Length: 383
Image (cartoon, rainbow, N blue to C red):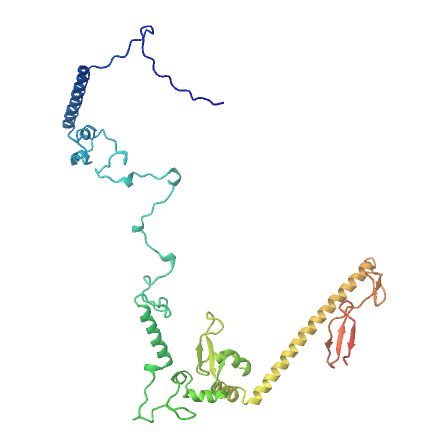
């Protein structure tokens, strides 16, 4: 079953029986009269707008100017200029004219209601106090406080210049390259030579710090004399004190960066033969006296360790006996009586089971075990 779309019926021609008069068409004379009246009304409107422009003294921005222009023509500059804006024209950029007559749109922008509570600072009138810290401007003559860091690149240097500066500084510190002291052939008496082989090519860095004229080949050949010792080795092996190691006149040292961590203190290196001369000759007298002192200190350390262990063991025994006495008192009813025989576990109603500790050698060298509860001691022999 198909449904037909309804359509508008065509207009029925008026008949005499319907009672509706037929629509009359305009005659050519009527059309001509209507067109003439339209042109006259348009001209009259243009005339009135021109008079209004002359009275206001400004250009009109109405549609009349555009209606009289052809498609290929342009409007005059006075018609689109905003210099003479009539009072009747609304400017959405501001609500009222500025006091000085200038136009500043940002002055008319108001903050939102939620952001009105703020403090407006004039940064051009503020002074930077550096957070209360002293600066170079406060004390410009304090060179110790405001000395520039030697490890940081200055701002006026390029990276290539900074690398060259660091290389020259390293050569100057090691007295190598162009900074190595010159050797004179004419003055042989003033030249410093190696104390082992008599060579003129000595290590000037060691000569400056340790006062030892030695060449690099002799340092490698004789490590038992010219090797470097750390501060820990000099303190533990030669029994030197901290003040003695820090005295540069007594024992000069060479500082190097710590190999374990860069942020730790620099490593202090001492020359072996200088440390031995001071330890054997001035402090202990000989190597045998140093060995005797080392043995005496080791025995004293061992004795103190044993005394500490024995004192701890005695405290444990006392504590165990006190706990056993309290348990016996509790089992006996808390009065003066009660108790039992040795070896009875009064708290549990059964025989006592020993809990032995580890074996400890006594003065005779025999191992002794002690019960941690009752304090009973038993000798133990190992075969």
